Length: 161
Ligand SMILES: [Fe+2]
Ligand SMILES: [Fe+2]
Image (cartoon, rainbow, N blue to C red):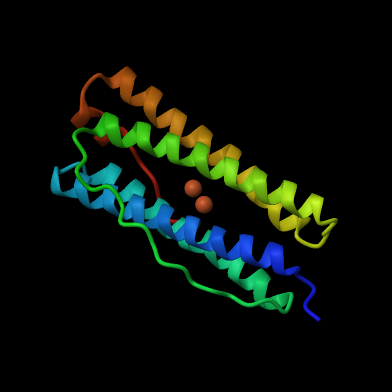
């Protein structure tokens, strides 16, 4: 018998899709930004996209380790008709808030099922989401302070971990 319950397994498969959707969304943002010559911000979202794939990996590895079944679901076509840098930054924060809710729901589900094993995994994601929301908020605030998209882009700096 698998250590992971069927219900949590299903919810984790859904979260794999959410993380990959996140990566896909950020990839689209990165492409739009590169097309519009915002090189640093494009790089920022590209690194973000890759991070989301690593988040998905944490879930599928957990499912395999606990004897569950990984199912890759169909991904959502991400929005691509962005109008401005500001719109992207705000959508980035809104998306992270959406993901935070998803993670909170997973924690509550595990608790309801009295399944303790995924606690440290989910705690990692709870902490990660605090950081993700803080980063997205900081980008919005710095952008507002610069008042100019290109100057703002020159300020943005991020390296692969
Ligand atoms: Fe994520
Ligand atoms: Fe994220």
